Image 1 (cartoon, rainbow, N blue to C red):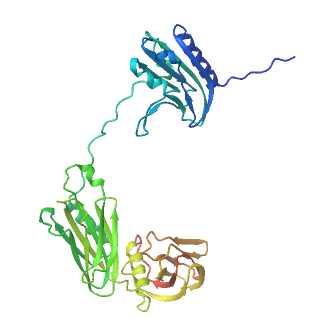
Image 2 (image 1 turned 90 degrees about the vertical axis):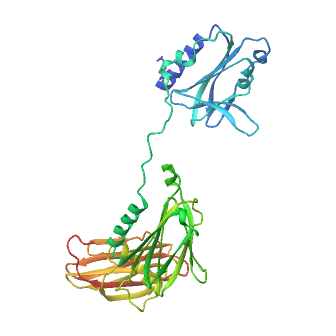
Image 3 (image 1 turned 30 degrees about the vertical axis):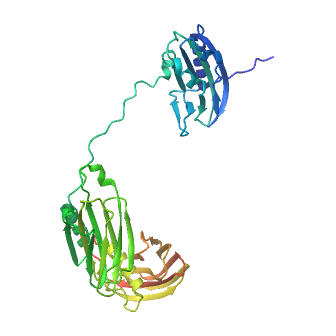
Amino acid sequence: MAAPLVVVTPAKADLEDAQQRLAQALRGEQVRRLGPRVLQRGERLALLLPSDWLETGAPDCIRVVAVGAAMSQLQLRGPEDDDGEATTITSHGGVVEGVRCNVDRSWLAQSSIEMLSPRGVVHLFASHGEGLSPRAFELLPERDPGEERLVREIGDYPKGSTLEQGLARVERQTRARGSRAFERRLLRGAELVEHATHFGLPPGCHELGLLIEPPSANPKSRHAGFDSHLTWAGDGADVASVSSPNWQASYRLCTSEARVIKWDFAGLPAGSNVAAYRGQWDMAPAAPTDWAFMARSQLTWAWIRRGTANLAGDLRESFLTGPGRAYRYVNLTAGACYVAAAAPTHGTASQLSLSVEHGLVTQLDLPAAVSEAATVAFCSASGGRATLHLESQGEELTLLVGLWRVAAGKTGQR
């Protein structure tokens, strides 16, 4: 008869060896063993120490050692206090140990071992005596993680740019996107009577912005945020509330008439210095004047983002559609370039995508903001026919879709 084949996995062999060495080392003490026990994640094993170990006059110290596989995670969890919090000791290398002496011995008597890993076997040893044997990691040096260094600051936080430098950077970026005007002002915290600023807005599209320099000298404070509010001056009608995760904020809007807007930032720390700016663009000249103002505004912002705010072209196709899927075949001229766009005229698009399929090439645009139209630029070498695909979602949504023929750009031009 053949002998049965027994296979011992490395994890099981390691655990058996560890618990045998612990048992051998504790032979000279009063020892209570509990285990092996299989615990699931979150399951706790009560220590159940003998009551005579806690009596007055009993030997001074009690030690508890729990050992599992080297990769398992255990936790020695003490009793909860009045606030429901418990002191815990986390294992290293599958070993957790707790020692309490004299009056603190009752803490261990009310403690438990908790399994943090999905599942594992635990051997538990509790010993009692005056001269306890070497600590568990001296008996199981391969489980010892070594010295743990305290976590310290890795260095100073990088210093942020000054408000003047920040304004100069924003102006460069704004003018690179075709802005025809840039207004800037510095508001010193010590001189601020009202934590607000006003902008006069001529007809067109505007990007308003704030850069904040908090009074604290601690660079960490630069990573805080603030809330602000925009209203129309005069009637006080709400425009928008702007929340920023850091010390800068911006807001974009278009207006068909000259207006004054107020930006209130009363929530800033007292003494903060403020830089305010306004970039200005004309409404996109290619946007048809008979299109809804909302659609022309969103089309303008889409082209500003691509650096083509002053795009000029002839509108060749246009149609009105609602939410869902829509497509339109369009005829192309060989050697000509085109721009296709879809912009809401009513409602808000929670999802919007526009793609153009021409031959083997498909180009797609997914606007990053709900205030932008979807737009795709492409050229046709051979002419023929292209397909415009539109997908959109939104309540009470109506969209205008257009195709413009434009002049070909220079090499390297966006």
